[in-house]
Length: 361
Image (cartoon, rainbow, N blue to C red; front, side, top):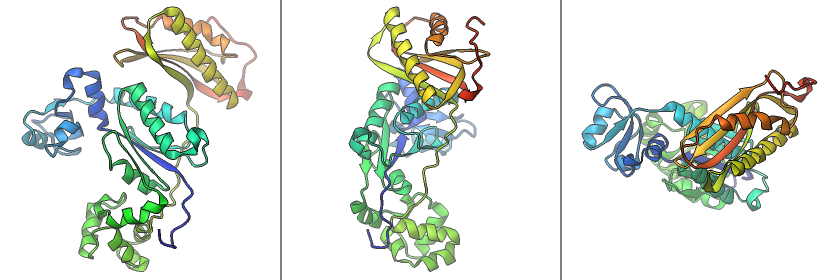
């Protein structure tokens, strides 16, 4: 980079799920796999494409396009209605995986998020290894693929995650950044929309190298305070921080089995193990919980949860076993189980602990 660039010391990962809504539908309904699929509204009305599978993208179908136009471009396209509750549940599962790596997470939507992994010692301190671990865990736990971008700021990480889609990863190092930005079309810069790109083209700017040549004063005069931002990103500078929400709404632990289980004793032992882990996490954060939730995911990736709330908080990990046993008995057993998880919620500071636990309420 040029000498005007600040020293890049941060490690930022951008995770972006591949064709998220469409991929969930193809995962849950095998007859849709490999077929051109649109998640959206009525193709005969004013429906809009919410998500397009990679099979239908070959025909030029994209998100926000009218469903009528999608059908015109691909007559064989299959339309399905969105199941947003399912997408939210899967997104929550993905967020839980991210939280096992770092609390510094900034969700942008259900299917993408920034993670600041600066200073982490996990995976030899390598952001690339961390990103690949995240992608592998997401695939193992949800059956879905994710793409990742790794760089020293948010802008470059987000752009990088889109380069090797689907199921890919791109790393932009400080040494690579100047050359990468120079050849990057203006339309690919995050934060530069269609209208701004059109104005920049009129100024003779078509890529990062062109943008870098313009003085900051010229850009500010033309675009106001956004002009300074455009000048900064042309030089690889983006000081925006990853804005994570630190308020804990729940604390949990889950595990995916190497082989699906159907033995009750083995499953109970695994549930108790996740319960102990979740309770220990809660204690470290000096919190107490009034609600416990048991989550089970079956071999076909469908999942179910059962919860119970006490008027007084759980006093120990063992005190939750009684309720976990009851919740487990309420779980239908029609298929082998690939994942179990335990989550504590209705959290409060430990200073609010009541003196006695009411077990049978």
